[in-house]
Image (cartoon, rainbow, N blue to C red; front, side, top):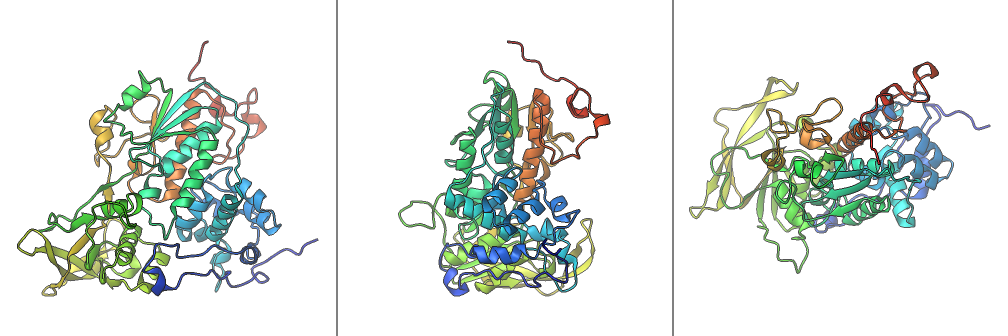
Length: 501
């Protein structure tokens, strides 16, 4: 019988993961961090103490059975680990790369709470499983009995993909509409190849297609047809809106409309999806030699590092708070620093200066200090009188947040909240019967995995609306026999829809 692992007996150090040399990687778009080897993955699984009440599962927005998949890995059953993960998350190779595990599953890891120990590298293990599955062509496709219902999904980002997967598994005929020419949403246009290669996105989307999900690209819902038409004349029984929040915010300072000022979303979309970084593609993209990026979230880190790879000689990050308050993942800031990005902490932009011909010449900034906490709990930045300065630049990239794309709200009667996001109830139902929404279009900008969690929550509500049995127990504890009547859970007793043939 194997001896029980404890905090005192497990390996203290995480398995080492190789990375590209910073000097070399700052000139290419190849992936920065390499995948664990099988031997390294085994070392990392040995650090899991198999908690009886695993906090990591509670910390995962989609409720992946982390203890279960790590146990399978520890036993050498990689295929079994993949099947455990994909019961709740169809995109392990994506989430293993881009999820902020330090704030979610790893942040709740018991091992990481012990003095002097780092948490189990759950994200790296998930990526190892996902990459192994892609390399071997594995899929986890259950037996699907057609339900006869048609479901439309607006947006092929993480929320839309998660909802589509669950509805397809429930036997629905699922069609996903994507405004761009290729599916993937923010995964495709917003995250550079050096963090998330397009080949990984392609492989995960192929798995959705194997479930029967259909993708129709170059379809802008709200322009070609409306949400009401989808529920009405197009014959969809339910619709999910997962269009994200890609409408950029600008700082509102003098000169922010000059030539040479653009949003990070525009920069990344042109570079990542429209292939401005590759030769032979006629994609307009101003390439600056001296670049300033305003903001310090993950999108800002991507923009900074993309500009460096596109050939900028100087790339500065302008952020009004300190490094400790930066919303980006610590790993992303660290990688950017290694690649030579100049961070101007406690600095706020004041004005974009003109060269007299309508182009960017320089950026004027002011030094800040941190005052009392604001409504969010973070200390408010306060300008330091007399500390203004300017530096030459020819490109200013704005990465200070996004808003809801207004097209759906402008072309349907769907109710919006005061910020312009789609208003939903606790079940993610909108004001239009049969129409649900989730992800950034409801909450504002968040993480990939939280958007996926919203897509799965909406799918559960949609199944209930359609009267389909929901066997997924991820989001609720199993009911006792006293709570069950005729084999049905309490939530499933009220018939909502009846289809008469």
